[in-house]
Image (cartoon, rainbow, N blue to C red):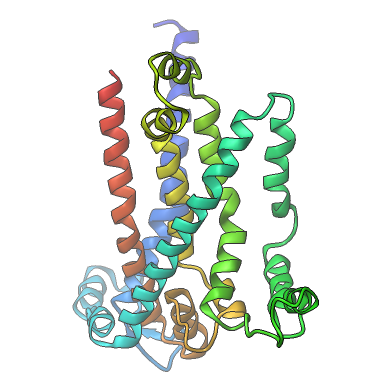
Length: 305
């Protein structure tokens, strides 16, 4: 093997190792730390949990450390309705929001994909434009819009649609408005990427065979856009499940999503083991839709061969 070929081989191996190193440093290592804390016990100490691994104690220290680990925090998650209801509320908000996002995002993505080619970059930029402003500022803007003397109530009163200010803020409606507004680009962009690549000759062939436009859309466009639908749904559903800022600023006191519960356990109660157990359980819960999506993708690739 020549020197040049050997260098190219090492370069290729180094490039392949980069994503594995990224996964190890930024995901697996932090997850291992969180998992370790979730198996600990709360303590009035620094750090606020026990046991702490003492590497200087050698093998005996490691055995003592493992012997003191417990699943008490996970048992608490399964027995306390506060955590169960928080998980269920998060799943409910994430599911309903994802459906609303799909109903709004699909027509938008379809319209952009079918618009003149020269207009599409501008329309995509308009979808992405809100990201140029801080996420927190955009959510605070909705607080001003939805409060009793805010812009929405003022507009509806002036149009004589309502005769007294409505309580939009501190409700589930406000949460859904904030979530749908914030995550809409995550649904539109994958759908647009899929629809923009679709071969229009398939629709022309369906029309030549006598298929109405709505039927061709349902039987041709929608099935071909399923990868974009799945990608957009995952990009929205997963982060919405762990959302904290929007329900905390726009939701009411009776709306407790799991992100708020985790924040309370970590910063208010300083119960790091329970907070870590909540995070690990949420991650495991969210692995289910990811695995389903990965299996569907694999079947689609195998079917295309």
